[in-house]
Length: 94
Image (spheres, helix red, strand yellow):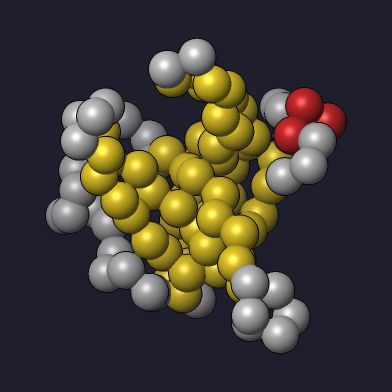
């Protein structure tokens, strides 16, 4: 998360729990794999996108479900900011 440029285009496998949010200002829904640290006191969310054609909520899980996300790290710009995300080829339940 500190130097995402070092990882763009590389494959990632991330375990955590599923969460989602909707931002009215962008009229967009965002999906995250949330990874707690070893003591579970702090978390880091990493956005991911499933392949085109997946529909929320039908193709997604309930918030808090333990998941594994596999895909390639990419980036996009929104409102003048650059964001990292995983272009997921697979999301599975742990």
